[in-house]
View 1 (cartoon, rainbow, N blue to C red):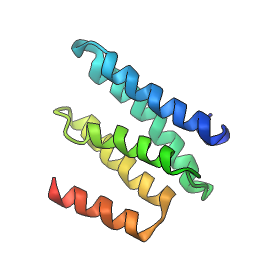
View 2: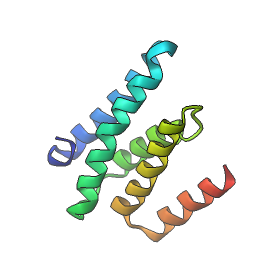
View 3: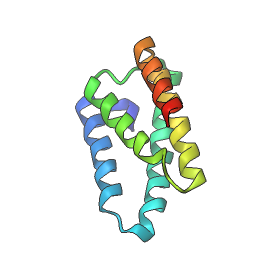
View 4: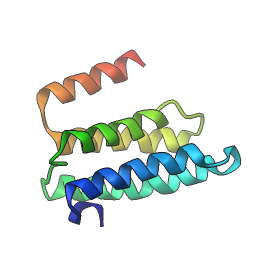
Length: 109
């Protein structure tokens, strides 16, 4: 659904995902994050395959924020999903400066 909705709704969805993660109790937070990342990864894969961008800087920032929050997770599956999501975001954005910034961030961590 994500690739087919208007940009403002994409932003709302990503912000909602972030809020769901923040509000989840610790015992359920990882399960919720894994489910959210499953949906986000599928959406990003679809956007990359159709060569469709986010179309909005705010949507990109929300997606990156969501992903970077999970890169430091203690759960290996979640870290792997976050890494793949970051790679897919780079494919979708496709700007050399953004790619360099994300690569530098990854090396710094």
